[in-house]
Image: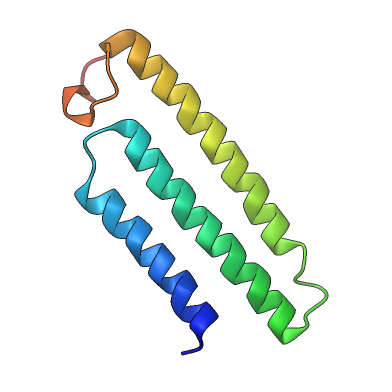
Length: 98
């Protein structure tokens, strides 16, 4: 495994473990998801450049656009839950309660 591949896979795994083990606040979960998306973006960009595929060069930009949409939706949900529940702690959220 080359050092760039190791770095990006380690970044993805660290963000995934952060998402799994440190789910106390919604903001920390959103930051872990954003770290996962950014590591996927960099890995996809390097993969397209490494294989010299010209048809595939638009895919990392599409992934980055979806990542920006995911981040804005997450921040809107964070603001809405902070207003209704008073905090962003995930233990205080109840999915059965409107």
